[in-house]
Length: 157
Image (cartoon, rainbow, N blue to C red):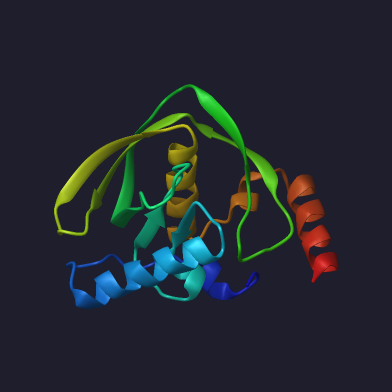
């Protein structure tokens, strides 16, 4: 839970996909589903690997598993979505991010994949990559809005 220091630290890259990494991805996916999230990064559950899962589908069960995700390109067009985090429950904020992105990552087979994401998928991927870099969604707000959000979250605790 915020303000745990692990949420502000960058994670370690994954060297290769093995049974341990597959188990972590499975746990992340189960946790994402249990929390009704559309994505989850490893450091959100206290693990320091560059791993994330994203499922912004309406039907669920379409999770994309990523190791070492890196944004290669972003569109000039922006979207706004309300973002939140299970690490800071009860609060959310509207964040503006690029509408389309191209990302490179290792998939579950250990292959380097280059994928395009758009809309809510793109937002979730960017949100998870921020987590892996020690950035919370509210870090993208102005100082005034961030302080108001954190005070509201503290009151809810």
